[in-house]
Image (cartoon, rainbow over all chains, first blue to last red; front, side, top):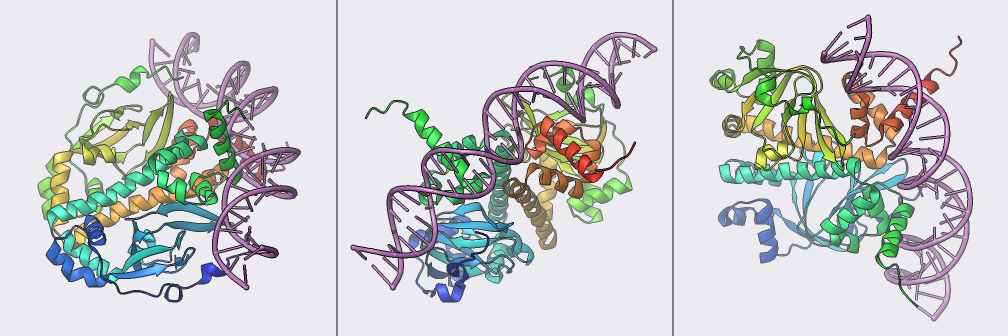
Length: 224
Length: 224
DNA sequence: TTATTTTAATAACAAATGTTATTGCCCGCG
DNA sequence: CGCGGGCAATAACATTTGTTATTAAAATAA
């Protein structure tokens, strides 16, 4: 259980990914612009920074200890961020379509990443290198309205983490599970349960118990 | 227990505070500059935005539901941020000397604050109004180096919340308590234990148990 | 000082949660 | 197809944690 860093996790980026230098389609283009709100002209300049990659499930994109040099955007698929604690694989975040993905602290400070990034489903990602992302951010930062939008997005992330932390001091695990169903139903549907358990801060057994309890409460009478 | 929003909590700012329009001293000046890194000239322009206030312990600076229009800096004293959940008073953050204090989400988005800000000790604070803080931030944002520093500080806050959240999925309450002793020993010394308990996500009784267990382990033999 | 209120420790009991082990299902791979 | 591994449900038991109540100490106010 603490032994097996299994073989799939050892696949390295350039082995697993076979980058495909496809053209970014309109949908993806719009998503990027939402994250990095430059106008179209500027964008055309920068599009070449981004490369598409097609990866299998359980592919590691960044390993704990490495320094994050790329930022990813999810066109299709599902990822998780996790760290190892005492032999246990603890998942603390999920990423679905339209998310930007990076080991944020490693990316910004160029320190070894405390976390691992890994696909859960086969995924289509776009990535760019830190240097190039920084060029875009620098450009954004010169325009007051864009800059505000960018800064807002950072604050929003902070608020998200705050709220998640709040739920650990105010909610029971059952309530946290219900919140997740309410707020991110896609996660429940697409992510294996044992990953969700660690995200909620409980054991897999306990999550299973919560589910069966909820199921029981919902249909107290279910004649044969 | 859930009933008493006692009288002291109802003291309102301008009753409790008696603003003293003192001159900001050199130490405080330096602290501000650390948070809002403008050069001295600019600072002189802005100093008048800040007002000093002297408040008693248990004074409410911002009540849940109000919109935050001020940001505070702590010259001396200790504050906490808390919210009410199901009749329980849950503390999620402490502020000591040299902290900036605000209901961040309320301050930025001008929405009712989900939290209450309250002094724990008699405190000396400096505050400025949102409009004025925004002027300073706008100015900072025009200078690339200062802007980077500012953005970094936002990220740092995000990382702090992330790490605190991590500790809820990887550590036992006992370990979280030990971490707090290690990382913020001042908090342990100055903050009543029942506030620390909710910060750690446990009951007061349980924190008390943890403490006595640790004390027991430390001195297994303590002859008469 | 005396009287109140706040805070902390402890015990006793109840409830929640973790651990380990077992079983069965499902799915991808040979 | 059939096999093996990953995944989920469940049971049984151990441990942790919460709740309520009691008491004492400490801080604060009158």
